[in-house]
Amino acid sequence: MTSTDSTRPGGGRVRIPQRTLRTDQWWLGPLLTTLGLATFLVYGAVRVFQQDHYWVQEHHYLTPFYSPCLAQQCAPDAALFGRLPFEFPFFLPYAFLSLPILLLFRVTCYYYRKAYYRSIWQAPTACAVREPHRSYTGETRPLMLPQNGHRYFFYAAFVITVINTWDMAVAYFHGTDGGFGIGVGNLVMLANVVLLWGYTLSCHSCRHVFGGRLRSFGRHPVRYWLWSRLSVLNNRHMWFGWLSIASLMTTDAYIALVASGTITDLRILN
Image 1 (tube, rainbow, N blue to C red):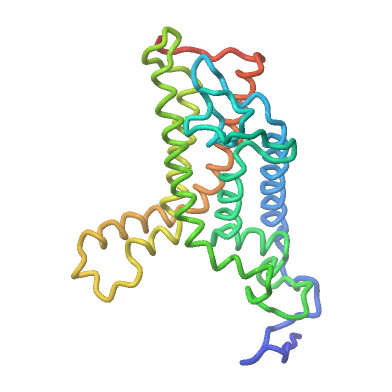
Image 2 (cartoon, rainbow, N blue to C red):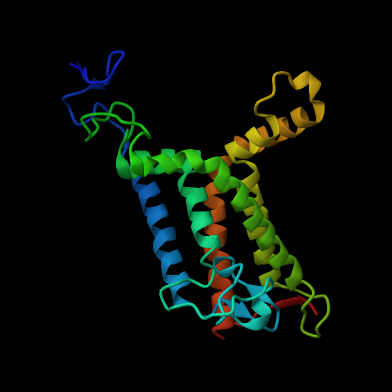
């Protein structure tokens, strides 16, 4: 037996008296999503406020969590774009400009909205599973309005990805003898940048930039070609989202271990 919430225009939402009609492990997906997001948020918070072991001077490895490094306390060579002329207080991360941008870009991402709406907010948790909320307000509440700014956060995140790419490329020209060189850290940073570009370019907003607001694809063959290629990436946006989160933590952890002297970077060339 089902009932309808008449508070919503147009028929309302179907409500079920049982907690769930499902017989499978419907809770496993939301649980894993919550654990995955929580792991990233906790790890990221610890690392950005640690403000140490973010830079390997010998090979110019800079963790993406600290890029661009802008504080006066940053190592001079780590601040590839210069340092502000004052020291940051202890509670302000060195990369205080990029971190909010990247966080807002991820939080407002269409895939991540679905992920945490279903797993944390439970709206809805899964098909045929009763919701804990009596009504549905969508994204009309004040705290939800920034979700509509995702397209603008994309532009800023695109710039940050370019900066991460620059950090990765510069490190290749700081081998053991000061010339071109390749170490495990270079490969780790390269993999991270590839996945970050995969996530950024597969974004729905990126597709809109190239193919949105067009009355006819026939009149814009180049934009149509780009839009169709990005659409292929967009089909794997979820995978790029999770893999890029994993690569961010892996890259940061590797650089932190090398910077702290816990491990030594294995050199492949020079």
